[in-house]
Length: 345
Ligand SMILES: NC(=O)c1ccc[n+]([C@@H]2O[C@H](COP(=O)([O-])OP(=O)(O)OC[C@H]3O[C@@H](n4cnc5c(N)ncnc54)[C@H](OP(=O)(O)O)[C@@H]3O)[C@@H](O)[C@H]2O)c1
Image (cartoon, rainbow, N blue to C red; front, side, top):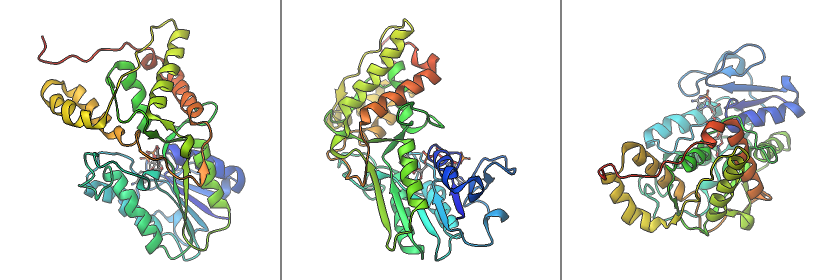
């Protein structure tokens, strides 16, 4: 079986390629990444959408294409998201034939409930941001423009492996941990009882690998990875993160950080945000923007309905935080600087 994996240097792609190599054998899969050195054993360099597909990838259609490459930046404009994720998907589909099984990695957040209070929903047709909007468009393209079998895999926020917390890059949700230590995340915005869905990267890779190696579906199939009703709530996420960071700090004789209070989305948008522009430093304003983007991801009123259930998400969270702290001890053991208003002095 010839399998192509795009985005093979990313959080999900690295894990998927490793998992697939175990079953398909290293020769059975070909990996691509934008920034790759090339050579016999590494990923094939391909800046998808900006360059034509390089020769080793063209010629005959693939049995399976696992498409993980994407820009996950939440701040993209529609045009940026179109270039980064929609144009790239169409270029990848150009390598597929009518029998190619396309396993497209999407995000669980194209489904589920979205809050009417979300700040940028209108601009992106009800989606939270340009990234999410582009992922929804991509699902539509896979369903309508690919002539062969297709599986859509929708993970929630992806953290490190179950057990040891290992992950290839600290991106996305990991920005919350240093923000909590330094005090930039001075409050948790959202509903304390709202659902905060996460999945460990090894289980996400397992679902993708099983789809890639299994029988191609007759009709497009969607796999949702989620803890469902057993999902953490926002209050669990903040408590487990702070407790794990504080256990690490105690082992190193460093004072604990305080658990930030939770502010409802409504109060945040109506009272705190208007003040922020006027009183906070540029760094603090950046933190405000970051917190505003997390709010609807970490306080959904309903969990997703899983086809693959994530057990004990709190344990996954703790392992991820601990691995981050062990990898970034200076940040994890850093000092909390309380927020001050720039005009206060
Ligand atoms: N991480 C999450 O929390 C999460 C949650 C839900 C869904 N997902 C989905 O999972 C997939 C993988 O996400 P990730 O977190 O693994 O992202 P990531 O760590 O940022 O990796 C993205 C990968 O895609 C490659 N890439 C991006 N744009 C490219 C382009 N134009 N041409 C060629 N390669 C390109 C990157 O290559 P370079 O490194 O060389 O730029 C990298 O290998 C995405 O489809 C994302 O939507 C992720």
